[in-house]
Every structure is written in C-alpha cells, then in structure tokens.
Length: 277
Image 1: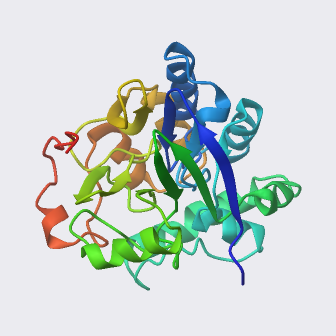
Image 2: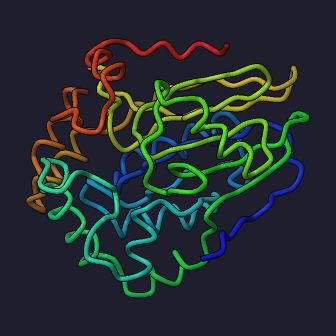
C-alpha cells in the first residue's frame, strides 16, 4: 500500500511535538494549555500518533484533539481502528503481559468510539514532512517502513538511517516506543518527543513532549508535562481498565519492560538525560 505523506511546507516559530495521548484527556488538556501559554498555534502542534490508547476517555480525547486543530499522523492504534481490526497492532509479543492488557483497553476503546471516527482516521497521513530552520523534517510513528517498530536510542543507527533516507530528511521525529530521547550522527538527528499519556518509566508522574524553536537556528527541548493524573486514574478504574497501567500513572514506573532493550531497562526509575547534542 502506498504511503500517504502530507507536506506542510516551510514552517516558522515554535513547534510543539508529542505522541501517545493514549485516551488521556487530562494530559491532552494540560498540553493544550502549555501550547497556548507558549504561543504555539494549533497548526504548529504535531502528534506522532496513538491519540487513542490505554486510558479511560477515548471519545472525549479524540473530540478535544479534533477541536484543537493540531496535526497528527497515523499511529498503529488509529490504523487498526480505521480498518476495524480486533487488536491494537502494537507488535507486542503474543502472550506477554502487554499483549494481554491490550486486549482489554483496545476492546474498550473500539466499543466507546463513535462509528464516524473511522472517517477521521482515514484522513490522517502515514507521515508528515516539513521544512524548518533550514532542515527537512520527517515525522514517523515507529519507522518509515513499519508503523509498529520499536526504535529506541540504543537501536542501531542503520535502522534509523533507513527512515531518514526514505523521507530524504535531516531530522526524524518519531513516536511509538514511549521513551523520549535524542540521537545524532553527524548532521542527522533522530528525536523522540516522548508520549504524554503515560510516564517514561523514569519514576516521575510527569510525561514528555518537545518544543522546536527557530529563533537561533534549529533548537529543540524536551518539556515535562504535569496534569491531573488522579482523575485519569479514576477514569481507568471506573471502566475496569488494566490497573497496572493506572498504577503507572501514579508511580511513573512501567508494569513490565518486555519491549525494552537492555540499555533502556537499566534506566528504570532514573531521571532521563535529555540534553540537546
């Protein structure tokens, strides 16, 4: 199937990047407030996908996102919902804890989204490209070729290079893996803003997004996001969603590390180093 790629042309001013809203309405509402405080217009706000996910307010979250007017690409969850599939397409190992939990939250999300949401998902592109501060930027969910590929900082650079080459980009903005990071080789950069709907296994309740700024060239900064996590937890409890994920909202620690390479497993409970290179 051909990739649907939308080119936003030349952008300027601050850009807000984020991923993994995961049906966390409270996190999204806080992010929108930050965008307003920092003077970032909706057309300069871009999601790397998975607007829908683990938490308890899928339709309310999607409505808020659509009303906001930000851009998004398709995450694997949107693709599966668009195509009326029976699983989230997250590429979890069959029989793993994440796989078992996903059967619960995905079924809930699918049952609690309006039928016309599939039309919205059909309108989303696989990738977005833009020019910013003299650089070509490409936005992917997992990678260019595989929407559900888990790409981490420790992932071999050659795998990242494939997405950079496919989109003829100098910078890739990616999502899916749930961890924010920066990786750079010479003049090429891979940035993961992180996700706003779940903590980053660092022991902090705050989640992560990223701001690009062209005031002095190409600059980027990860920003922590505080939100009403107690209400998000209550919504998950009310709908009998996996309480292991609800606990993660409170502790900042993942229930398991099944998807993580050894290097990322060693970061569990530690403050992340997200300093621009």
